[in-house]
Length: 131
Image 1: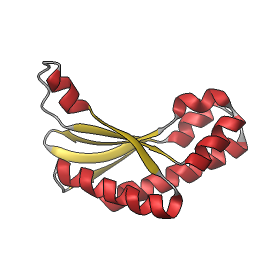
Image 2: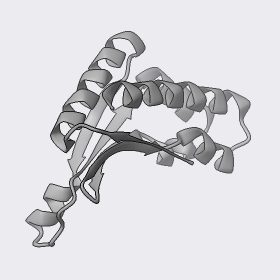
Image 3: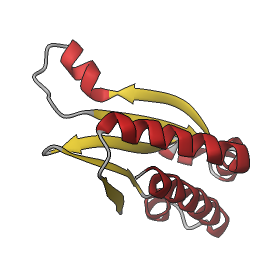
Image 4: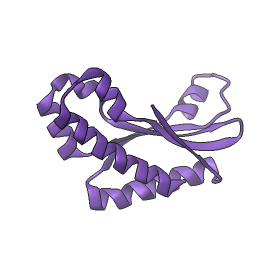
């Protein structure tokens, strides 16, 4: 259900490399970053003692999203797709919860599953490029 890779890069380097990979894929595959949540920074700003780093990148492919929502509006709760860069015990990781298995738990639509599998494959390529 998870796809997580270890990175030898620092947290900030991994984030920068992921952003570059998303730009490259955005040009060729129409993905875009909707928002980046700096979860670690947010928690620390709220007074929490939280030393790990964690950024969550929300990514979207407009054509995929439109087709998904047209096929089953309830599936909107699985969107946008999220890629996480985080540290755990001093090591940097990049990963996502695979969207295709999540969809399969909620829908038996072969056409929606195909879209989710295509998006998942593209996101995994981005993660592999960034690591």
